[in-house]
Image (cartoon, rainbow, N blue to C red; front, side, top):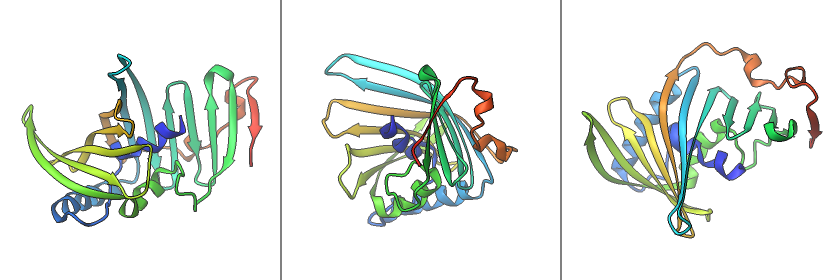
Length: 213
């Protein structure tokens, strides 16, 4: 599950990538500027895992919201909450919450804000082409990780007019699986109370608390 949440930000956060493709960098800088102008972001998204070799294809939906260093994400029976200092991972099936301290120096951190700002050190971008679908123009780019990852590239589709990431496809290194994330709805600047980003055990009767700090 951690792998999944590490990849999700590639779908809906602005990316600033390693500047080897001038056109790609210009596009990504525009997306970054647009996204950083939002005080909050709320996202509804879908996720499809497909493995053609095993004839597996599963689609699920999730929700996420961000406010500065704070974030909240619910997907496939798990909810991840962080106030920027502490991270709570609630597992519904087990009625269990795991508590960890957010490590700002962890390159594999789930913090969406950190992932956003670290893209310039993590990926080499390449502009592929523009496509027009249903009256909208989409800019397609490939992001190749500079360091070794469990995937070899992320194909990103950007809504040119909105300057927002609309879709991303993660290609597993084994060549058999893809993970597709699609933004269903993105709502910027929505009023979100800070209490959204703190786990309250009283909201989960009988929850088993596992403190890993």
